[in-house]
Image 1 (cartoon, rainbow, N blue to C red):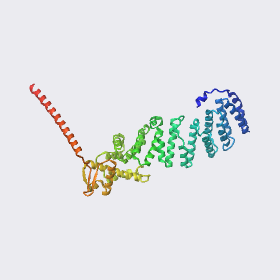
Image 2 (spheres, rainbow, N blue to C red):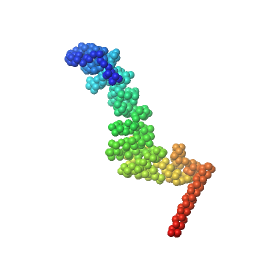
Image 3 (spheres, helix red, strand yellow):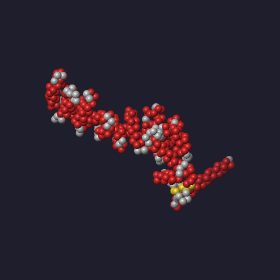
Image 4 (cartoon, rainbow, N blue to C red):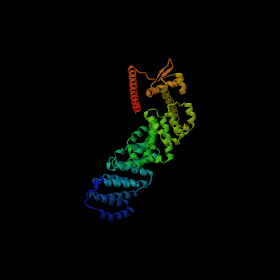
Length: 447
């Protein structure tokens, strides 16, 4: 818009007239603002009708500067902004410049009430006008921050989230990202985590590959961690921490990467077992930096080893330090819940280990290995079977748990056929090796 209007040829250049009259009008404004404003409005009409963009911008700025001193509540200023923005033939670039001039004065407002009234006036004037959408967004952000400072989070959130800044082509990508991050923050403070997650998806994650915006990347993943923690999605939390861990500024500072790596380990072991969780746990185990965190390194090794972890022993060895962390501390929100979830993950790990070593096991022996009651054992096994993690069948009359999946006739025949095929391949290979050896020995005896 502004580029096209800058190419419009003015019918008359009012630069000389303004150079001569504006100093006189400023002097007059000190004693009679009404008379000074009247002269400025005459100049505004002349420059507007002549399509003199440069002169129009000068006059509009002068009107803003003059009217702000007319009264304490800036009522005349706001009134003139409304009237001038509706003038027929007013160039859009000139309106945008006038709005920006008012925005530049906001920090000089005589009172908070005046500042808020002026912002609301700008929001009214700019509503529905694409060419001043960025200015509208900026004053809306300022208003939202004012409401937030007052403690009215709900109003601040509603004000800011009504804007769809991701559609603003004229807004810089960084500013756009900062705006959306503020929307996400207010939704989290309001307690609307669903809306916060929806808004977060408007941010292109690949944008954070740019080293210049790694500060925004850390803010983004901090919010994503809070959202995932609210929903108790531990694997998502661990993945968000992994993105933070991969940030150069974090990697370069042990004071930053050590707590991040610690949280990665804690939330990975808290996450329910699946292929992705297991893969990430094994990858973390290969990280040489993990060896600087002995407790966390040992915890990872215990979870990837096919060995039993007795919960009483885990609680005795790791309990004190883990309960002092912000993840498992009783003083933290959901700290006790996460501690209980850790116990569940240990028990589930033990059941998976038992299922690998036993095809059948008596319930009494299984409860002894798991340090559980018979009822708890059945509940955990049923949960893992439902999730598809293991195969198991509980025979209550015989008090036996079977982990071996029964094979039908076709499966048995296929297995037998495969074994016979493998055996024949080995026999053939051995035959070739024997023949080769005989030929080699024959050559040696002849020589």
